[in-house]
Image 1 (cartoon, rainbow, N blue to C red):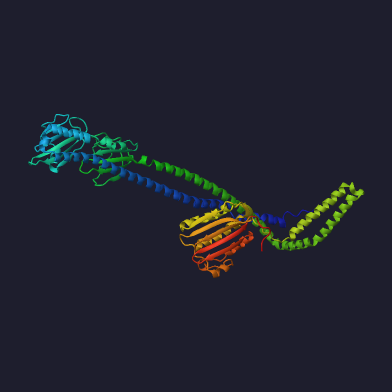
Image 2: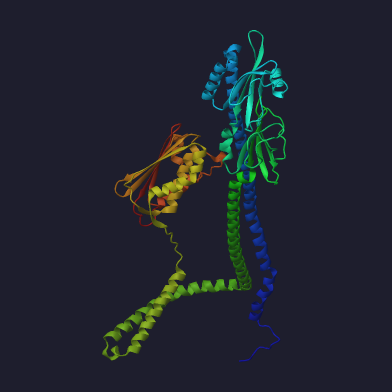
Length: 577
């Protein structure tokens, strides 16, 4: 055999090399990279955007909640402190107005009054009567303060001016934290006197519940910022508060953010207690209050990282697979492009092959018959019974003829076979699956869908997809006929031994009697102006026919419609007309 010259290209050689030239039109590596970047961007950016929104919204929510809780706690606590002071001031006012100057000047009676005050309220240390010149005329208590002169002290001047006085917490010569309450009164004879009592320091008991928390503190200060009660974190009693701030005067509870001497962020709630020298301070470390949010933020970040990783891996796999398929398809396209010019020739050959196949069916039948006859002769002839090679040859001929017959039958077969996707189903599951698509619309429009499925309906064989389409079309029509607040009833039960009946009824607008006989006809619809096609019930009717069932409808304008579908429990053989 001669070898073609090396400087000449054969026809098939040119076909083989041309795809390599055409494939350079597409840079699949670049397509893969751009597809991965763009798809990842469109998938990840919304996730990160909503995660960022959730991050900020949650943070602001937690911060707002911390401020509100601090404000609420401050308001509740200052009322307790104010109630404590007002209760004791009211007790002294009652004592002044209910007892004459002679009674208050009697040590025994004043002692009984002090005893009753201690019994009723607790915390009263001593009590004394001071005249208008500042001399303490009567005194009951553990200290020797008779005839003590208060005329030069600030509290005496203030009570003379305002009529009442509540002191700051002070140690005094007894070196015990206490405060004084004084009430000015004018006797019937016109003589002015002051009833003064000292009270043990009990504010710590009021504030102790707040101070027990690991991230909060509550204490009282005066207007100069001196602590009137001990603090867990911001100084000792009667020392300057370590928080670098001066609370601005306000008649309501205020909450501000500041930092302590170490630079840690604080949420501070404060309230000026009316008619007292005290300011209530409720201080919380913001970092501690934000720990739940920080934990949830860490969880959010972890979930975000995991989600992005999964998304990237999924996109990477899908894009790689699609680009590989594109590359493979492009390779085949290039190959098929060069083979396209032979398609007309191959079509002609195909038609010729079909004619030949038809023509050789008869010779094949004769060959098969004769080969069978020879096989029978060999079977009953003693001369050939022992010749195994001849028998194998005849069997081979018969098998080859059968193979040729199968091939020709396939070539000549143009019949179409429509196979139903038959499977065993449970009717209640199929109905619930269909209703699952419509739950949201039912909730939005307040449509009540009731379901009554008989328990004696067995599992049966049916085309699940067609049955779902039938139910979906009928229930969709029911939804279209209803206004907000309507009702749909779905009932299913056995119909004899071999059928099941499904009844779908609604209380919608109904169908006019003149239209009932046309509703299953193609393109008949009363909703053409609002997008209806008139094919829904026509398709439904056809599907039910294919399933071997039947459908019936009854309707009354203004009262609703009822569709009844009857299906066989066993699939029908053959396709109905």
